[in-house]
Image 1 (cartoon, rainbow, N blue to C red):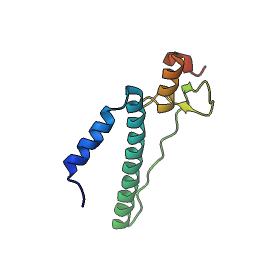
Image 2: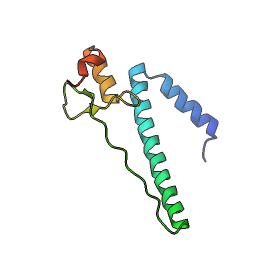
Image 3: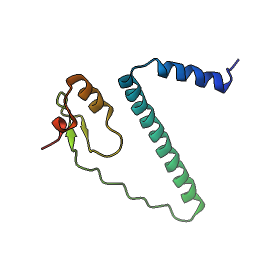
Image 4: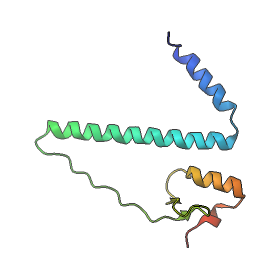
Length: 107
């Protein structure tokens, strides 16, 4: 038997509250990424549906990727362009090393 929605939310809220702030930030970043992926997938589905309703497909231009502005000190493959929420790897590395954001700036 499924639990009522409010009791599930209460359990999630209690679990979230028991985490420290770094764990909460990392979880929020992961959930945001999952949510954004789902939104983008739904946008693509809707564009495809709309394209099938018209005689011609919808044209969309991909956004160009910006240049990385910040790079991990431990893993040079991890980069962040400085747009949107602070990358979870960057938050974690700043917390571990105690270094400020400027220390990760790409020169």
